[in-house]
Image (cartoon, rainbow, N blue to C red; front, side):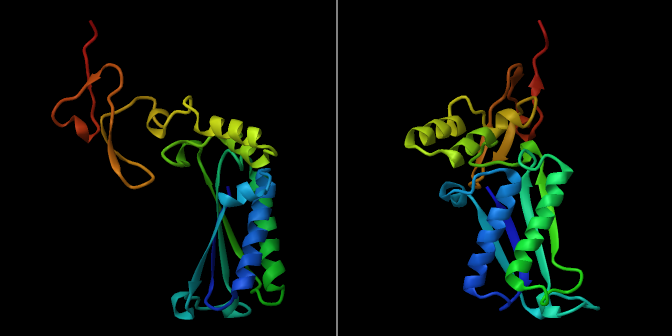
Length: 209
């Protein structure tokens, strides 16, 4: 699972260059995350291109070619980039991937800017659940259909707890939003009972007996 956002000047990359750079960025990040870059892995990887008109990328004192400015954002879960050394390696490999497509001479002396955003363990949701990374690794590495089925059973198995049950030590009454954007009511945990106003996130505790 690779998520990269590329900010670049409009018309700087043609369609073939975008495909080439996208493939290289996915391979570079997957290598550091120790994910096997199979076709199944590529199904869960995105590279998004944001193209700017020069008027929308203001820089009062540009270096080098002002039309060759780049900003690359890499978003990764902490489980896959657990140490600063791995984060630094992502910076190096992503920079090399960009330069391999753009060429050394097109970039300003300070570029490309590469930002790595590491998301805390409980801050990365998929389909309303915290991903089981061991299961996903097995899915990406599977060679047979039996291995695929076993890996998916781990990822989507009944034992996997939804975000509402894992993100907080106590379950609360209130409204949450799923990844699809639909709101739903969270259930009260043991020892709570609903009352008027409780839907604002303030459970009412029963007195101990």
